[in-house]
Image (cartoon, rainbow, N blue to C red):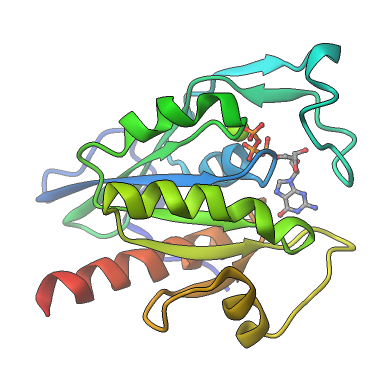
Length: 198
Ligand SMILES: Nc1nc2c(ncn2[C@@H]2O[C@H](COP(=O)(O)OP(=O)(O)OP(=O)(O)O)[C@@H](O)[C@H]2O)c(=O)[nH]1
Ligand SMILES: [Mg+2]
């Protein structure tokens, strides 16, 4: 399936028809695929703040299953996606290491909502992330970023394991794939719109 996003018209500049700009966060625990997700979706060259991970972090950062990962986000990712003629999304990717939690708490200011990326191999690591969003009163949807070899669970099992409210959207995505990532983001946007109009 090919997409028909406004951004496909190829412009780096925003169309004059854009009336609404929304700030959305892409959050999740360490190495869940946030930078990959923002990079897949952004129509402009994404801003990244990757730094090489040091041996000092080896005991803290759990790299099981993602041994090829050598860098980590130390401030934020930033990207832009024009979703329709009138709506542009500004995507802010959070850093995943726990020592940066305070920093991304500040990133919630002015955001309309957040997409929480989760990994079925370490679902429990999503709890502190969702706790911050709840503390900040920021609505969120959850997208399971599927890694090869990661267990696949039924939606009800994941909902239960993450203790999600019935209204919280839960989708699956591949953060490396633009179309799949777009669908995950649309689930969040639709949820936010429904909350807004209710
Ligand atoms: N197989 C698979 N690999 C992925 C997927 N998404 C990301 N990766 C890989 O997983 C690793 C981690 O991705 P990042 O995008 O850096 O993760 P992050 O959440 O931004 O990491 P931190 O900023 O360090 O917390 C990279 O090597 C990606 O290539 C996915 O959907 N499937
Ligand atoms: Mg990152």
